[in-house]
Image (cartoon, rainbow, N blue to C red; front, side):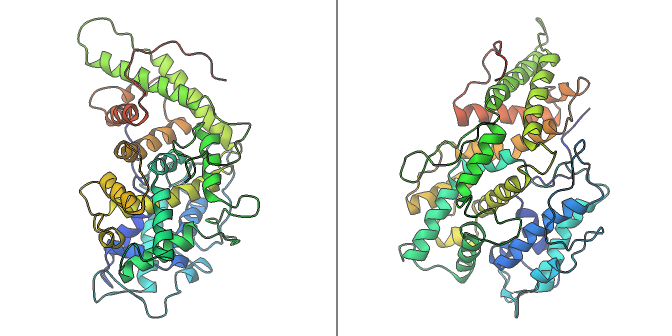
Length: 417
């Protein structure tokens, strides 16, 4: 039976780095120290993750996919950093104060942590996703729909243009610096993480173009003033994606209900489910065009951007969360408190969006990679199967977040256009 893949990074992409920092012993650092790293080191981490996937002999390319766009280089086939990439992590003269006082964040500690993360991409026992070791574009779409990026932008404006947020700690100021430098500063840098230019000056517009092309979805909120968000909407996009995906969810729900019924007719149709899976997979692969290069960079940057903010609100006692008195028991409450502090209304069902952001990307990645067939498709709805539990989670939270009753009786679906 096909179960949920192991080895794929199943957490926001900066979380493995935070965990690796705390796993070191000389010095003994804290997970919160990821928010204090120099912007150059964080940029280099993104380069290292992308380059590690590109050169790893363990990845399984999709069909005839060509290697990804090269970064600046500096990851050898053993997963170790080499020059020139390694030098980007060696920018600290005396180190940065760690959350674990009196320890200091040193260049060597950062290099050790990064190599610990990229080693997972090279590990022979790790069944990483074939396409890439970062989340699917759907992760970025779902997280951004919470309005987390709008909250962060307004927070930066208030902190940098006024004193209305009060006194912030040194650690929070380092978070502000890194956040502004990485995600809100127009850059002509040749690094993979830089996707701004005179052709596409606004990252938010690039992200929305990506979401629409791949998923056929726009974000549920417009511009800051309440009007529509201006971005270039492409002629070719997966406009039927949402319709097919919801039909897929309804069929999975019907399969689950029939699997739990011990009497009555069994009308589960695996062929219909496989048809939905094949259509979804083909749409995703069509937008990739050459297999892995088209939209891969935009997806990577969108995912890394949202993962930074996701990790921030997922960390209950992160410095910026504590300083702004936004500590709460749940991630959506912390985001809501931050939004309230800076005057941004967050999504009413942000809790469901965060849950979906952990599960939908896994399913869509597997669909895109042709991991399902007539022999294992039943693992998506068979009670007790790992993937079935994930699908039930998606069905419940998708219904809540979108107000679409995907538990209703499936109806015949017209051909996608």
